Image (tube, rainbow, N blue to C red; front, top):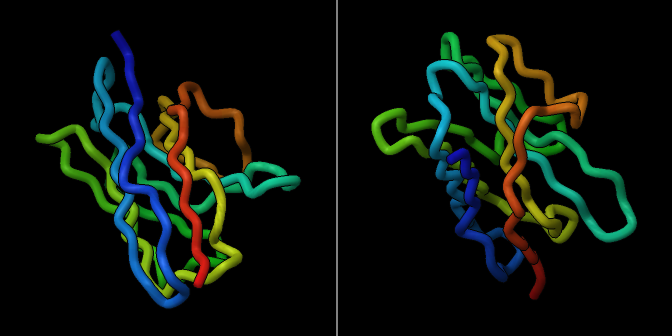
Length: 124
C-alpha cells in the first residue's frame, strides 16, 4: 500500500527553522524522485525542491536557495526538508510528492503521488 506522509509543520517566528519529513511506503527512493511543493492561500501550488532517485542531485526554487536543504535517508524511506531563515512568505501548506523518474521537475505539479500536506506558518 503506497503512502506518503508529511510531518514537522508548525508555527515558527521569522528567522526560525523547521524540518519537514516525508515518510514513504510502498515505493522505493531508488526508483522514485521526491519533491516538496507548497501552496499558500489564494495561490497556485509551486515547487520548492526535489531530489533525484538516480543520483541524489537536488534542485531548489530561487526563492528558497541558500535557506532550504533537501536530503533523504533511503534506509528510513524518508526525505527531509530543512528550512532555515524562514520568512512570512514561506507560510503555506507543504506537500511531498513522488514521481517515477530520474529527472524530476518542480516546474510542474504532474507528479505521480502526493501526500496530504503539513501546515507551516511563519509569524511573530
